[in-house]
Length: 251
Image (cartoon, rainbow, N blue to C red; front, top):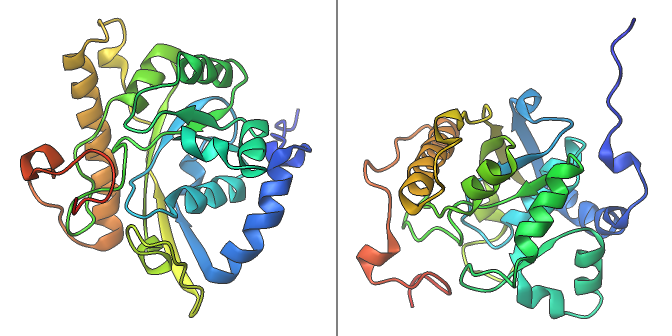
């Protein structure tokens, strides 16, 4: 019997068709995408997709990458965005998940949403850093535990990724997109991270922090490959530099 061909998620009519129609023409005009090790990106089944984060446009970039690889990305997004007319409706219709600013959840909805995604074999994009990196050279900073908590609670893989080049499209904390000349954004997909050593353990702070450190190491290693540089030996921690967890890092 010939192998069964996996049908692309994006082939089914959905609200994502509206988003793709609005976003893809602009993003393809603004940048070309070089995806390394695309075969490591699961074409079916539930998983947590965890990239680095250093530009406001990162979610759009990684959403485009997921679409190009045949998957429909669901993000944990700031709850305030869902209050914008029309945009909020489209986000809800496409299954995006609202999260209160600062990382706290709006009730139990993010937990329930993650469970629904896992049951349906869908993916959720979670930035382990929680916000744009404060590292002066855009290296991944300390991680938060949301990504590994979802992966461990739902028993699904977590796939790391790194991308480089988005800062030329939109600088950190900028609201302006630089469309010309056309940019190149390089993305590298990592191997699914083995969290077996943490499964069955109490999901206390120590366990979640330990698992998060494993994820951040994987993301940083991918970015080192893309940049051809070594990251700082110590990961940037905003608390050690009197920086707030939200808002501009200079504040």
